[in-house]
Length: 592
Image (cartoon, rainbow, N blue to C red; front, side):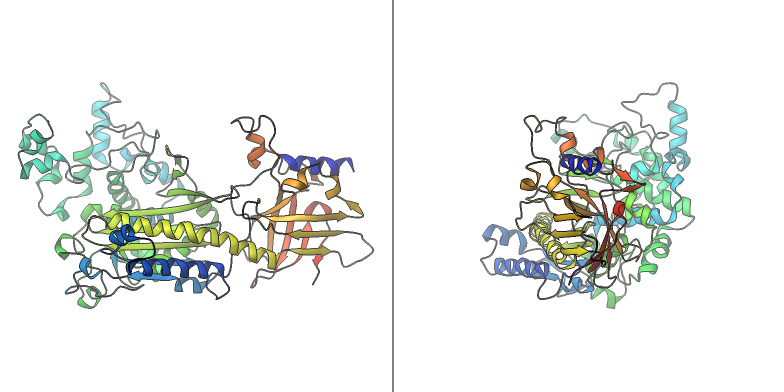
């Protein structure tokens, strides 16, 4: 009994674990789904906004000149792809060339969402050790620069190319500048067209011919002729922003280099690499690495403004940074494949979908090449959103994945108007702020149906019962609440420290879900501690809120964790019919 008391006492210092608090919801699209109802609220708000009401006049002005498509997808509900919304702004489209009314198969430029495809292709094609290779192994100009600068190396002005790895540039932590000549609006390049620019900025006069001679790609009017090695030669001597591995700094420059790296290491052109690793295996018929020329495909393409200045621009060596085309239907296939580990081993996917570095904002982190947003629910639970945004020329895009719920959404927008980017971000916020709470509520409702209830052994001679419920308040800590737990006649809930059941009680949260089709889902017991007199401070709070440092699996019995509960579920419906508290070695059936 002393051991049981210790088990229950140690749960008082447990808190929310990182990850899902309920199994992922399976119903996003039926009439009874809270997610479907919320999506309808989103689309209704948008429709009313365009009619002069809804979200207000300011929002209407922001949205009305942007053509966009938005849609959801789910691992567990194919019908989730029916949750879409499309708005066609005639003022933003060149209907004489492209589509006149957008739908889920309309082809947009996806700008820097292309970076996700580039890293995804690399994850599939490269060996793990390749991500740790320094760029001097790939680019001779960088190796030559490092060797030449070795004696008089200056960390402020010289990039440490031999210290920057392939993985660093995929995660934007190489310390490289955002862009390089002749890309990304360098004032020196602009001064060729307008000699007044240096004076306007108060800059000293330079010999343009001499300065631009250092950049081989600057001599080309047709940037298709610029090679990655020529580009590397021109950027080798540019100064760094940070030392390698210091801080994330968004770098299109780095992704130009990453594209060539993948091509060199794989022995394939980028076009073939995208096709062989992603496009073909996933059946992406409308995702392209070059602007379409077939009139039939162009008629389904979202052409904003002059095609030659927008949709049909040739990407050249910037393809890996922002040169791809896709639809929201195809992006749903890509997002689902990542969540499902269709093209990658599951362990590799899990490691990939993690932060590589923090940013200066507590709500955001950076990965390869993820832009990670942290949504905080009223209960304090955090849902991480793994995204890749894109914004270039007349096009804006977003692909967002929520692994905790097995869902994602995408938005693609187009317009020559300056409000385009803000409009797409507004739609993304509207979806996130309304749909994510609905996902949590739907998951809770399904947990009530699939897991809550009383469990007991078939042999009634054993006085053992486990009763589970779910919290009713949105501010209550989520998870399966242990309402009653009697084991062999011992009321374990009665042994809990006084006050614990008045706060959060013991909660069970999923830690290993049924990814391999085993019909089993592992949960772990966790609780929230009642705040003490000093627990609100940074270090004093550590054991209150950080289960990974705490006592989650401190007590075992014969090697099995007293806090683990394994549910036996129907593989099709997700409904539990039994649970095994692992250390107790007893299978308890769910009462009807």
